[in-house]
Image (cartoon, rainbow, N blue to C red; front, top):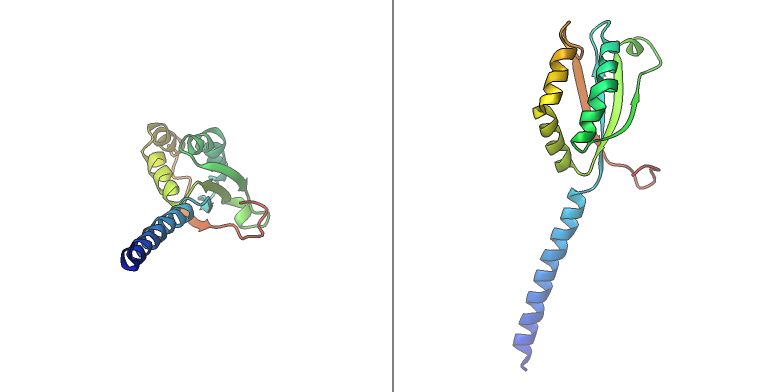
Length: 141
């Protein structure tokens, strides 16, 4: 065997191997678990209604659509303690989050719950969402 075909074959093998490994690494980074921190502000007097909707329905529907409920909080200090719900959910990936939210929004059960919970007016006036990656030293991954 001459050296030229051998070198060419090795070069092709290295190129293809690099391409495959690159796609595997990219797929792994795209499928990395992500956390979503969400902060909801409720109109005056509506925080209890928002809590009830999450307690009785939203958490269950999140789970149905692949969103993991991590934790839910109210701030301790006024004025936010009277109108703010902060929670964290996790998703298998950023793409999974996008798909889960689309399925959640289209879910007839969610649409019914949303409509029924707002019969006396909107219970959310502002939503802030932040996607987060855990640090390498975070106890939660």
